[in-house]
Image 1 (cartoon, helix red, strand yellow):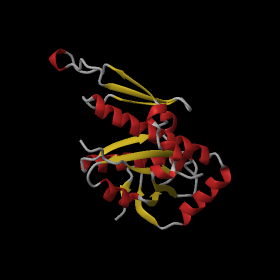
Image 2 (tube, helix red, strand yellow):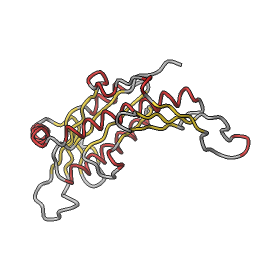
Image 3 (cartoon, one colour):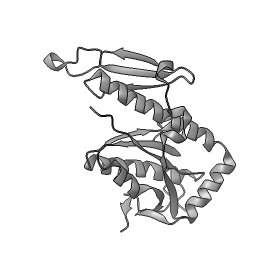
Length: 211
């Protein structure tokens, strides 16, 4: 089977407030639903697995992944009263969606010889359908200690590919988080988000799209 290249998108609130982090969560849910509707594989890496994170890295795989990504790249505007500050006058919150290429991130270009690859027996339904082979794969990047696991596929070969993709995404996101800690760069990014013309606009607590 030919390995498909993942399309990666960084979703970030810049240096925006808590409301912008909530907007990131809304964008993630909406993007995941649109990916599922188009039979695309969707994977999101979120720092610390927080429900409302300032950033996330999404990987889309499958036919039509690039077309979907194009619909999201740019600034996303969410118009809604603050759910955290009832008397706050601001109503518009902004999120940036940027394409990320592995070749622009040396940390994501993995040297397979330097990785620790482990296999294990995947869990699953009992009886005759239970997976009795060591098809689960865990890949660890020794230099950073970052690891990724896949038990999604029945094939060990496919799980290895999925785990490698997830590891690359984790390393990219780790680097993005390091850059995010450079406050001046993030302040500049957030000002750019607010000035940009939104590619998609949403409103209200239900995150309904404005046509």
